[in-house]
Length: 270
Image 1 (cartoon, rainbow, N blue to C red):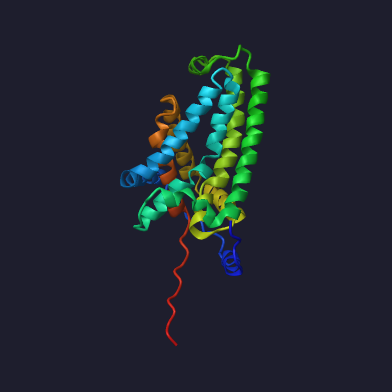
Image 2: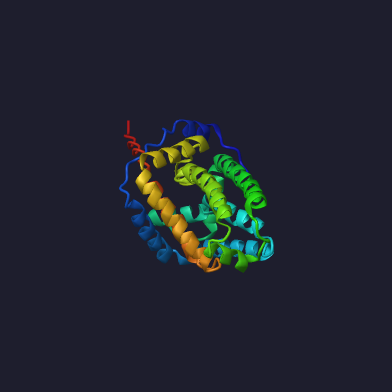
């Protein structure tokens, strides 16, 4: 991997802190609608990432079918890392927006555009994931009073609201980690891909977008949760379509939430 030259480092340092805009609480609905447009325009690369998400979810479920305390931690942790794995979908939307060819191959290595800062962000989400995975196991050990079931048995207990104390603690702890991951990732990777923004400024801008637009962010989080749950209830097969929709919609969230950089003035001949 090539190291950035002095000109690239100076350009990154000269970037202003992203300006966060106000959006209406209904904005996430338009993001999802525009995301379906990207999915129709670029079906092959979008569905490729959707199949990858679904395959990973199915693999986790299959491997840990009789140890669901690990499955739940890994599956929910996988969602914490979703913004990192969805980089290719952001790039598809970026290229489609610019009228460029939305081929799959260029999106596979898009992380190289700002590898250092994307790596820092990946480490942050990775640490959140590891802490959550450990916390999930602790909650199971302390509050799960029944014999560990297989997948179908676990889902049956959830639907019947059995072991309510465990459910309240588990989802309460999970909500804390989900809010942390959501807060730092609302627009982080799109900023790093589109502007070569540094990781710290990108995460701070994401937190600012959340605090400045709480109503819209609550609607957006609920939409993400709803689409994800629908995907899980179809035993991950729905994720083939729904994860690309979430990824593309995240790009449009970035476009609406962050003020574009001013156009550079054209150079005039001396």
